[in-house]
Length: 98
Image (cartoon, rainbow, N blue to C red):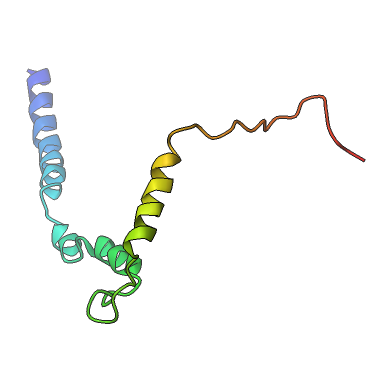
């Protein structure tokens, strides 16, 4: 009988604080966070914009004539035909010191 009364006593005394702790976890603190949700992202996007009104009006960029554009594209394409020369970066045992 003593064990059962002890268990009931602990259950009553221990259940109330445990239930109170569990209910504290159910409270909502998100309204404080939700009010500013995404603020950092919006701020960073705004900081990255050099001139937000850059595309609105103003003079257009000067265009290339056909022969200059064709030559630029041809140089670009030719740059992939042959690999660039290998440069020896590590100079072991030799040098051209004074």
